[in-house]
Every structure is written in C-alpha cells, then in structure tokens.
Length: 311
Image (cartoon, helix red, strand yellow):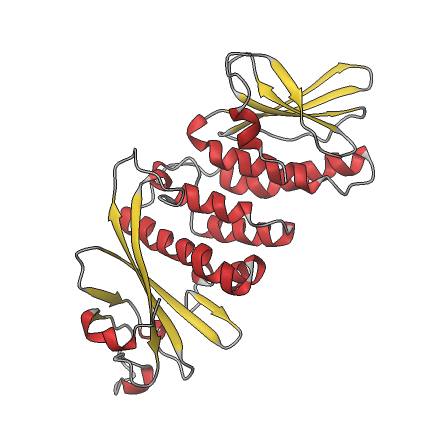
C-alpha cells in the first residue's frame, strides 16, 4: 500500500508547482507535489477526458486539459489541519484503481470513490460536536480499533459497530455483544442511559474506558477522533466495508473540519466486565409498570470489580 504521508514528508515543501511520479501500477499515471499556493496536491494524468468531479470545502478538484490527449485531475488540500483525512482519501483513491483494466474504468472509479468521501468532506461545520459526544465516540472507536479488529478482523468489526445505527448495543457480532462506556479518570460510576443497553438473555461485556483531557500538543497516535478514524481507515482495504464505515460516521455527523475531532485525550485503561445473570443491572422484566417509558441508572465501578476480566 502506498504511504502518501511518507511521500510528502520526504519531499521539500518549498518546491512549489512541481510534482513527482507515484510508483504504483495503474492504467493512469499518478503524481504528488505542491500547487503554486503550496497546497498538498495529488494528480491523476489520463489520455481521455475525465468525469466531472465537484470540489468540497476541504478538497479543491482541478480538472485541466493541458493539450490533446493530456488531461489532469488534481486534488488539493485546502486545510492542512485535515491532512490525515486527506492522506486516507488519496490512498483509497489510488488503491481503488489498481485493478481497473483501462483509463475509463480508473476515472469512473475515482469519481465514484470520491462521491463516497464527499459526504464527510462536504459536511458544514455549523454545530461543533459537544465534548461528551466526542468522548463517547472516541471510546467506541478506540474499542473498535484495539479490541474488535484484533478479535474479529476489520471487516466484521466495522459491520458489528451498531451505535450509529441506533442498535440496542454498541457492538453485536454472532452471539456476542459489547456496551462501551467512556469516563474520566476521577469518575466512580458509569451511567446506563437506557434499560436495553445491558438487558439481554445472553451474556455480554461492558467495556469501561478511562480517559484524561490533554492539551493540543499531546499525541500518541490515537489521542483524538481524527487519529483513530485515520488508523481504522488505514486497516481497511475492502471498499464496501470502508463505505459502510464512512456512512456510519456520517450518521453521527462526524466532520473532518470540525475542531472537536482534534480534541486530545490520553486513554489510560480499557477494562471489560462480564455482564451475566449475576451482574447488577435493571432489565425490562424487572420493571413492574408498562407506563414507564424511560429509565436511567448508574453503577458504582468499584462494586463490579468481581466481574472484571483479567487483562
């Protein structure tokens, strides 16, 4: 797989309006470099006219007919703070055309793949994601990356992520289910926001992830939503699965140009607890009145120590 980040890191940033060839087998040529304005640029060179692709607020698409049978399709990054998303996008576009049998197939694939990304890239940053939602999503994606992918593989792990689809459990796969709770270091309890979260006739797992707010200078590779999303995308080569993942993020109103996705946290621990018939929880069968339509409760974390699994 081509590492676009590394290619740009090794190229002097003061060389403007100049491009180098990407060493990859494809029916069209691919170049990387900087535009006249100093923007990161990836260009696809074809001998036939490309399909029209519209720009987004984050990515400018320039399509130029330089001469007869020489057509350029250039993707310029307008906001350097979103470079991680840009690298993932470009690597996805390049990977998507490797098996195309002709230029037309490559150009069509580029247009279709960019359309998938456009939902995220074009989302308006009118309502910044609140911090509590950021923490909750960070915990789910961290669990997806550190636990689900190693256990079940990236494809099944992404499909199992049910939070964005309003499923009763955050993750469900085969006969297993997982509910994720993200709390600060000094918090002694977890809030269960609905009965269905821990209600099941089948044993499941409660994952409690402890995090700490950090300054913007902190980074360990998985310290913010932007970094974790990029890491998950790097592990995903199946286009249909990548599309599913992006669609789930879009449902959650995730935006790569939202400042909230860059909020930094240090993840201190991730503990799993077995939720079985002896686990202290409220189930729907325990509610005596059908008139009760909503119920929330909290569980002391120290009180469920006996259910914690060994790391």
